[in-house]
Image (spheres, rainbow over the protein chains, first blue to last red):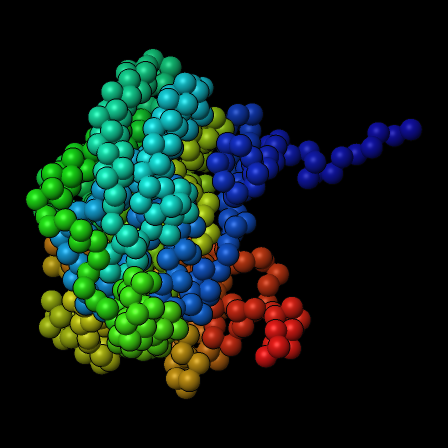
Length: 401
Length: 160
């Protein structure tokens, strides 16, 4: 009997490897179909969209205040930044001036969110290079950040933090005590984490030179956030287009040199230190601001307290109008961006004067940062591509929206 | 800067506005690559960073139903600019910006996916977030948010 002749397709020399959509190393639901030759990646195709939830379409059918919970689910590792970014977009649209105390409170929460975002990314990078300890060390601290969120808004992960014009309620004493406790207890742990990794021989061998990116190419591919800064470009929205009174603060923007995985790790670590500095300054500034101010004085847009709704005509009317989305807004367009955990998170809002946006587009940093990944992986080792993906910190929710 | 743009592309620029201090140019679709090229490469323009591309749909603007909006950023001088262009939904073609800004690749794919705007010259114009065999362009206004055949949300079940 003659041998069965394999056709050319089966005789190819590379192996097709399906990485994802649910592979532990992708840290999210997205797929890469790779052609590998031994351990080297020859080519790859990224497929995304597995958790696409049509937020932009839904947003066109919701009043402004109902869009906040949608933004939670973009980058769910730092949802407060998304929430406030959206609130600030609406405030910009409606020309609402928030009191300084609100701005500073927001900065505390946004910087805590940035820390929790970077904790995950750097912790997981350790796991992907074979060191689990750091991750466990840091996760406990994320828990403390979530407890602060919980104290202020009641939620932990998808926070729906704050309202247009400020916060839903003031920070209580317990919240401030928890923030102070965190400021005291977190630095030694972060230091210990850095001691474990920064000069660790195995870690350095795995990370240095992997996924290096020239600054010019990073800009061409529209990178933003820590990964852009790791290439040496000092673009940070907080410094370039200050929002929420970032201009009142002293902080530095850490940059790397060659944009490899190690540089990104170091940039994120340093950003956590800068975030701590910002929180400390904000706490200091808040102590000098008049107490009890937690929202702007804009009755047309900010819901009155429920007790007033039951007893005062004015409050009842405003409550009704806000909930029913009967508040007039200008027919115009506005773009506002904030520095999210992964880069420039932009909101492009077009209104026609109606109760919901005519068009709302999210500029999602993960989506834009990720597109060059397949190209970067060409010729790389499979294990290097994994840590490269890990340190790009692609959050599937933000990728797909 | 705006004066220079005006003199270089006199007729192509239809309208200049400045909502919330972001200069917005409405331009002719076929001139978009030239204008982007000019904005990116001219030394005193320097809009080398592409922030975003997205689409928009105005079903009642006859002949100009679909729009594409570009946000550019000059990182050295920290100036942002917005370019808007409108095309007909009967022939939704516009030149691609990928050769100029490689990062436009997925942004244009997303815009194609949701609005059916065809970017001529794009290296790989496929759907990106929706399934490949989808026929509709879901962010167009005529596309309903929910399946109109759903029975569980009909008024009759709620005594309305």
